[in-house]
Image (cartoon, rainbow, N blue to C red; front, side, top):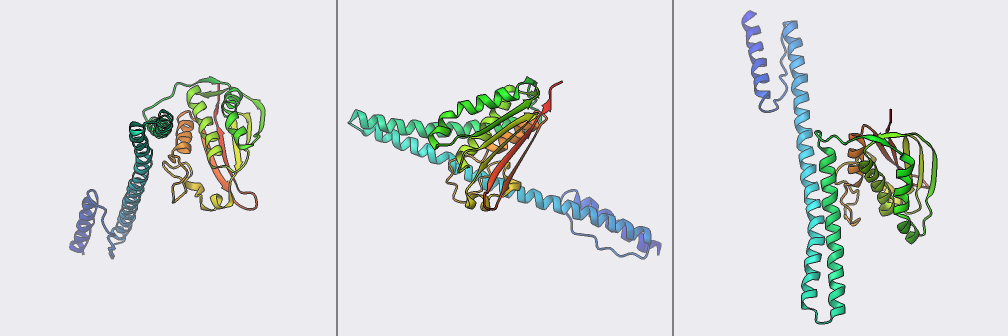
Amino acid sequence: MRGRRDRDLSRLAELLDGAAANPAPRARLESVDPAVAALARAVDRHLDADLERDLERRRADERFREQLAALSHDIRTPLAGAQGYLQLARRAEDPERAARYLEGAEKRLAAMRVLVDDLFSYARAADPSWEPELETCDLAAIVTEALAARYGAFVARGWEPDVRVGECVPVLAAPDALARVMANLLENALAHGCGAPRVCAEGTGLTIENPVAPADAARLDAARLTERFYQGDPARNSGGTGLGLAVARALTEAMGGTLAVGVTAGKRPSFSARVELRRAP
C-alpha cells in the first residue's frame, strides 16, 4: 500500500515538473488513498488551467500575426501608390499633370502618416509604464472643440449632429489624451456612420451614438470593437487602421476612466460609445 502511494505521488511530481516547461495532459490518476486521489484531482485542475492558458496564448499569437499581416498590407498600399504617383510625376511633361500626380502622392503619404500616428499612439497608451500627466479639465469645452474642428466634415455629409451638453463637472484627465479620445470617437462616427451622431455630455461622462447600416451592424463583433487592428470588414475597404477605438480605450483607461462600446441591431441599428472619467478633486 505504501509503495503504491509513493509511486502515485512520484508520478504526480513528474507531471508537475514537466508542466513547468510544456503543458502536460491530465494525470487521470485513480488511487484508493483519499488524500492521493484528492491531490490528483487538484493536479488535473492545475494542468487543465495551464493547457487552456497555453491554447489561449497560441490563439492570441495567431490573431496577432494575422493582424500584423493585414496592417502590413494597409501600410504597403498607400506607400506603393505614392511611389507610383511620384514616378508618373517624374515622367510627366505637362506641369499641370505632374502637379496632379504629386497631389496624389501627398494624399497617400498623408494616409501613411495616419497609420504611423495610430500605431505610435496605441503603443504609448498600451505601455503599462506610461503615466499621463493628469490635470483638471473642462469636459464640455473639449467636446465642443472636437465637434467644431469637424464642422466642415459634418456639413460635407449633410449631417447636423444632435449635441446635448448638460451640467458637466471638472474631470481628471490629460488634455491632449482626452482630445484624442474625442477625436477618435467622432472620426469613427464620420468614417463608419450612416447619419448624424448624437453627442451627449453630462457629469463626468460622454456618450456618442450614431446610426450604422444594417449590414455593418450585422458583421460587427461588439466584444472586439476596441481590439487592436479590428475592423470587422473582411474586405478591409474602410481605409482605417482598426486602431481608432483601441487607442481611445487605451488612453481612457490610462487616465483612470472607462470606455464602453456597443452595437444595437434592429430596425434602427446604431453604434454607441460611452466614456466615463474620474471627477477632479
